[in-house]
Length: 445
Image (cartoon, rainbow, N blue to C red; front, side, top):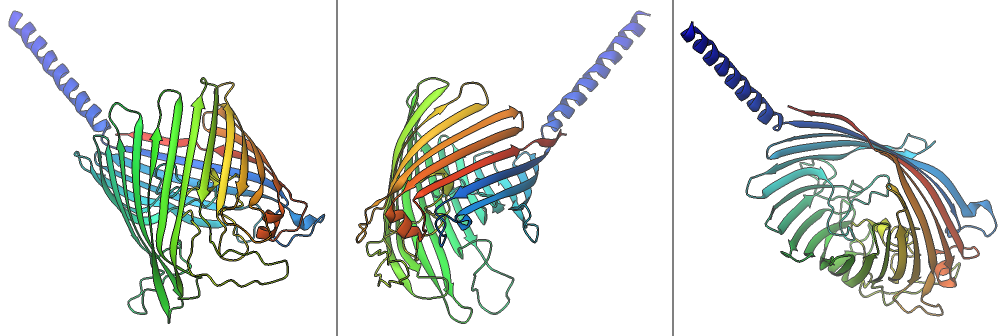
């Protein structure tokens, strides 16, 4: 009986050990595979008045009201050293003919090794530093993506990324490699980005280099112009203070327009600085200054006149593929909508603001912008206008955020001349946005 009892106990222990081993194995396997499905529905209504080119003062053609919409469905898969993501997107305006635009916003595979090396290929976002040069521009309903290969290393405070892209309209066996009117504005792009987080100091330093090939002309006669960008970004956060600074220089050559093979040399630059301070968890403030160089030969012809100017080079800095809405004023008069003509007088943006968070999930922000050109204009003052921005957002559910804002600009004669608008210089813009972004499905096995 005693031996039988011992056998029973041993058998029970073996069964328990096997069960524990199986459970442990199952637990470990549970970490190997992960599947998620996320959705986003974002709708934004906008009301605008003033600043519209060709509008007549005092009439309804100086106003614009519409509701834009974006729907995203994302499927993500992860396991050790492998990740995949596919995002389908539809964007448009309520009531628009054709039902808007449907596309695949993301479709990439990410492979990595245990020593920090990785490779990601396919359609993807490129988001770096403060998104001034490379960002997803998420405010725009279509947003920004790139068909590219990204390889690099991340570890021990170092991040080194290399990105290459080559775009074509179709699989041409013959007929040349002319590229135009595709999903990207460039033919080729090569980017190198290096970031270093200094040990024991809240300091991050980034260096960025880009080489962009733009094509112009026709299929019979076309030209590829290459322009380069080199610069860096610094972020320092001692205690409640945040200091940011950026400088970028553009060089190379640029096409005059999409139909011409003529090019001009580029020599442009920009510099920016920002200081933020958190008084406590609820209240913070910030002040900053942006300077973007402009074309020296920029001239503004009188209303009804063409006014041709012979340019020998391009001195106006372009924002490349950045999240432009985050900078230079929320009304997006600069580097989203164009000036009259193809050239730019540059931009100075001196701004200050405060942010207040009275309770969890609720935020208020008020900002002021002084806007001016960097180029001296004939018979016009440099000042473009003064803009006041008021925004608020509230997360009243886990996956639901409501945002609203109102911007008011007192424009000048210079602003009116550059934008070819005829109004009383009073520009107003209001918006209300609902963003619903739940995780619909999550599974591990």
